Length: 299
Image (cartoon, rainbow, N blue to C red):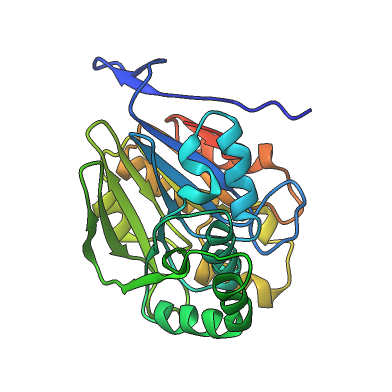
């Protein structure tokens, strides 16, 4: 049986000591995978939980079922019917394949409100085509014996640009541009609550803009690939990953400037090395608190 590590971190004093303490804000890693089909890692997705309200970032494969698992760990706001707010970093398939799932499955399971989706230019078109593809399904569910709630199948989409994109009594969410190869619109997010600043990189290469927005955050969740492992791949893949993603040594440089209280490695691309060696590469150049993220880790 897998052991789930529950970690809440608070730095106190000027010497950077760690002390466990309950806070209102939790971070739940729902999926830490990549396009590699690792059965132990669902596709990219995480949740920020504030006052029993969930805010989801990205929706890779398995998102709703991973959320259901997290619900059983003590987070009722991750029950399918409560998945109502979603933020998309960019439109790569591994970050959006679960879009139909997070729209439709909770609607079947008695969500009582529309889902609101905030994402790059193109998210409205993607949503439109998904709903058209499932038109027969939704018509039968709403008009047939199931008597489904039409409101639950409604989707409110907002195409975003850099700046504050969402705010309520729990959280403000700021989007910032990142470089992700040839994607014109790729974003990271800053979640600011009353007790935490949590920054999510999305997929990106080394980003000065991320450093600016992430400065002195409590938690930085950042994608990474093994610099050592990439050198073993063909030139084609070396060219691709070095343009689209962040190496271990680049991330160490980023973290040394951002100075997060905790750095979480996410979307880990090991390329034949191990998660431990990936962590060791980062730690060879960064001496702050850093961990490998795993599905259903809680911080």
